[in-house]
Length: 300
Figure 1: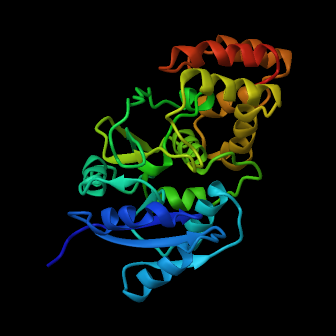
Figure 2 (figure 1 turned 90 degrees about the horizontal axis):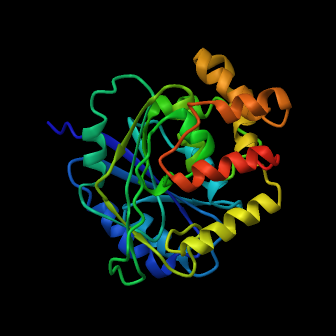
């Protein structure tokens, strides 16, 4: 009797024909799990849809086309439309997975029971030809306080269970900068089981067409951060406001208080509370300094 756990892989595509073949083969080759693939195309014009149609005709995947909404809402649409399964995984169109990627994730989460649960992991940066690049390692604290100030999680590594998917679909945020940040924040806000795998299990391909990439220099990353501050996007407080609207009644008293203060940090009463909060710390020392600057100047 086959007792492999079922995982539905959710992939969003957009003009991905150049690299998607290698990624599909790496997903089909996953060992130790019962893996199926649901793909949503986000308005490709390069022949990606023809390739997906041929793969579907061969019975290797199912796919559908949608309006061009960008990766965050494309993955949200996939979560909404996916059939019921034990586990779900997000996949980018241009990476390559190691053959134990899903099995390793489920092994780490096997004791979570019926609780909402989320796995994420380290990636290995590679160039267009899959040659290794200098890696960007993360060392997350995996706390809710860190999640509120530091956006670092890679959706292309995420695996979540149906219990967490159900909680996510209870509330559709009006603001969601990226789906992976939102999923991670909701999971920690609700005290779900969240585990980080420090062993890279995907080759994260860096190329000119990446929707999101990690191979930029430190100077480039800081330029992007400063640009977001200059535009006054107030990303972190807006996310906290959405978390408050969607899940305040389900949070612990501590998480509820922290969320409300971050969402309303621009009020002087809460600004000083936020700046003193010992829970708001992260493993990245630069972010540890930058978020306080953002709070002081109402850019948070």
